[in-house]
Image: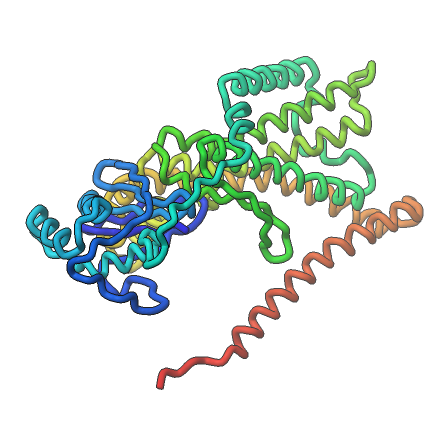
Length: 438
C-alpha cells in the first residue's frame, strides 16, 4: 500500500509500481471504513517502527514490513516524529502551532496514520518480526560490478558477431523462419512468455538486492496473461539507488537479445546460414528488440518514463505534460483553452512539462515509426502470404491451405474474444442498477 499525505499545497512522490492514493488534511479526503475513536488528550500515540527518507521539502515515511508508505511535507514529518517520541497528541499539536504558526487537526492526522497502519492499536504490543528478504544474495551477485562487466562483455561479443555476419543483424525478415504462418505465430507467442517473465523477474530481483519486499505476480489484461512486479518500497530508498531496479528489465532484455543472437551464430553453417534453431533464435531476438524499443513510448509510462521522472525529481509529469500539450494545441488551433491549474499540478511538474511535453511528442513519433517500420511490414507480409494461399490454393497444396486457415482461425478467435468481452462489459454497465440516495 502506498499513500500520499499532501500538506502546504505540496503533492506527494509517485510510486513506480502502483498508483498513490491521496489522503488530504480534511476528514472528507480520508478514506474511512468507520470513524476511529478520538485520541485521549493525555495519552501518547503508540507507533510502529517507521523509516524516514528526507528529500528536501518532502519526507517519505513508511513501514517496510507491510509496504505502507506516505510522502509528507517536512512539517508533517516533524509532527509525526514528535508523536513517535511519545509526545501526547495535544502537546504535539500545541508544539506544531507554536513552531509553524498554524493550527493542525491532530485527531484527523492520527486517523490518517491509522489508515496507513502506522498506529499500534490497543493490545498490539508485539514487535513485528523482521522477515528475511529471499533471493537478496542472488540479486546482489547479479546486479554487481562483476555482473556489469559480464553484461558489457556479452554486448561486445554481440556487436562483434553482427559485424562479422550481417545476417545476424535483427530485422523483421528474421520472423519468417518457416513458411507456415500458424507455426510462426504459435512459436513466437509461446516463447515470449518466459522472456517477459525474465524481464519482470529482473525488476523484482534488483529490488530484493536492496532489501525490498518486491513481488512478482501474474495478472490479466483482457484475456492476455501478464506478469507484474510490485516494488512499493522503492520510494523508501535514496533516489540514486532506484535506477538499477528501474532499468533491470531493459538490461536483461539487452542481455537476452545478445545471447539469442550469439546462440544463432553458433548454429551457422559453412555458408553463414543459421540452422532452423538459429532462425528461431533470431526471430525471438527481433521480438526482444521490439520490446526494448517500446520502452521509448513514454506515454505508456514504461520503465524509462519512471527513470526520467526520478532524474527530474517530478511527481506526476505525464499527466501534467499532457495537460500543457493540450493547452498548447488549443492555442495554436484557436480553440477555447484554460491555463493549467497550478494548484492541481506540482510546481516542479509544471516547470519540467514546458519542455518534456515536446519530448512526449517525440515518444509518440518513435512509436508510430516503430509501428510503420517494424510491425506493419510483418503484418502485410503475413496477410499477403495467407490470402495468396487461399486464392491460389491449388498451387500450394493441402498443407499450405490448412496453415492459412489455421492462422485465420487463431486471429479471428482472438478478435471474437475481445468483442465478446467488450459487449459483456457494456451490457453489465447498462443493466447495473443505479443508486438513488434517499
